[in-house]
View 1 (spheres, one colour):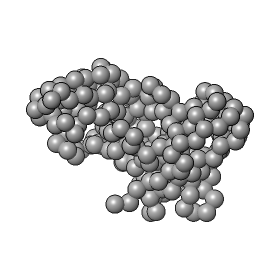
View 2 (cartoon, chains in turn green, red):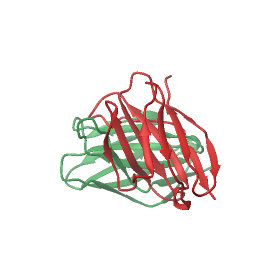
View 3 (cartoon, one colour):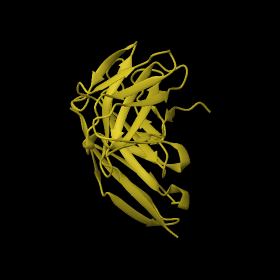
Length: 115
Length: 114
């Protein structure tokens, strides 16, 4: 069974500072990995995804994540935080089964941006 | 931009009552899902639906839950007899292909069971 662990339920960074949100995965098969963002009172929006192509994945809003098989990690980064990045971020893994895109989510990391 | 829409945005019900949550997925999508998020907890998979049948369901999705796509556009989640522990945000999602995991989520329906 797949699972993801997000270290740090709350992360605070200053505006303009590096954002680093950690995600480690466990999977018995090559995983598909995703980062979703949830802004207040909104649904989940896909930031980026890894599906066994390039290990460095670029997403929307300047975010990127690197798949590291040796570390079973898929950390999310952004070089310079913006106030609009304040949201909850979820790492997720998929088993990619046919006709089924079941996602297993982490517990989420709430990102706060300090002006 | 196409989006998944959910109604109602918030429903309050008494324990034991039936609840139907409605979703309109993106029109050309073939895969449909319900997830839920209990306050302060992780987003959990409930059920996936493809080709007019359930393709997978979680342990949470017991006999009190059912899904259907009654008219080719709506996708509904029914809870037959609600329990206090069913209080959560329920998210509908849809996708247009297998293997990509790119699901498009609605804004959620908050269910409060009293």
